[in-house]
Amino acid sequence: MAKARLASVSAEELKKEIVRRQRALPKLIAKRDELNCQIAELEALGAAKPTAKRGRKPGKRRARRTMRAARSGSLASALVEALKANGRLTVAQAVEAVRMAGYKSKSRNFQTIVGITLSQGKQFKRVKRGVYKLKA
Image (cartoon, rainbow, N blue to C red; front, side):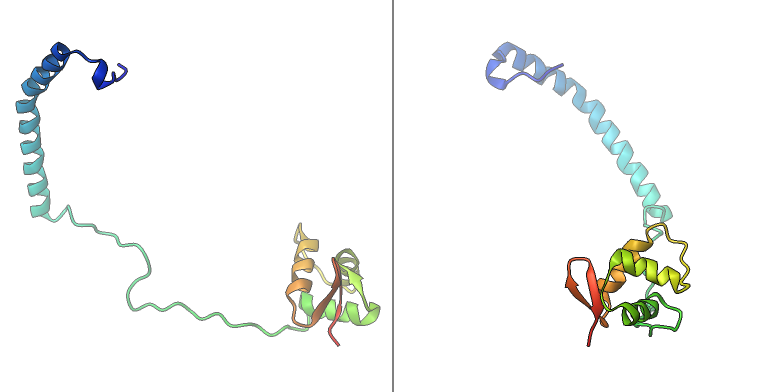
């Protein structure tokens, strides 16, 4: 049933609603008292207390992340060798040069990974959009 605006409800209908709610009040109070008793019983048993806490356990510390050095077979080192040989390369050319040099990757988005490595690597310099060279 849609709610009517209070201004559009007659005084007689308001009186009927008040009487209806007053009749329902004892049942609601009894229900509230029953639920309060059940809550008290549960608290006495200790079941109302939370058992699991979120977050890390006290005393445990997070491991600090450290930067790893580039290994001889890493993507960054393969890109350095490719840029030494060719000077400037686009990301697509760098992908081809690295693969031709024998670097293997099972990634479906290898070109994206190469682009990110070139843009974030300290030893690479962006010449223009999508073109990189080694820092001198």
